Image (tube, rainbow, N blue to C red; front, side, top):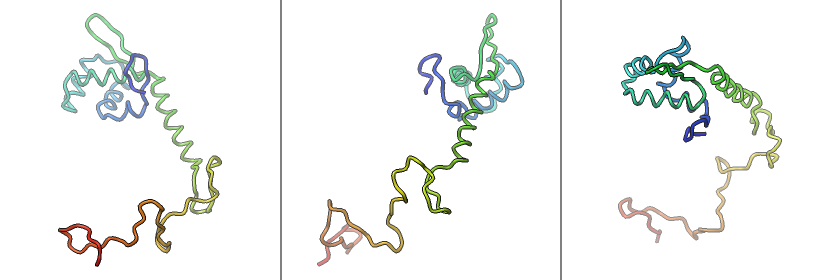
Length: 156
């Protein structure tokens, strides 16, 4: 989900896709920092403006990775534990899918996915298989290239 509206959560990988956001998370892991401090460090390292750094902070806030509190003219950002837990849960979900690995297993020669409708994979064209033509677009004879500059020409 995109952070088009406040309160909507972004995908944890989408939030971590930008190197500047990963650096902000890295800085906030050490404790609470102001928006100015974060913008100065990230802006200097990645050569981005304060506005761009502020945009990254907003995306992280909308994604549930950081909390912000106002203190007079300063905005203090802290890392949220549940944001990191969402990232860990997403990685655990991918690891679970990786270990179960549904689909065709070439070693055992059988289908591992219980929802798959085929008992074996769909045969495809390849070495040792004769070419098959479909019904539509059938040509009585294949085109022959006589001159590269003239394009495809029919043989005579």
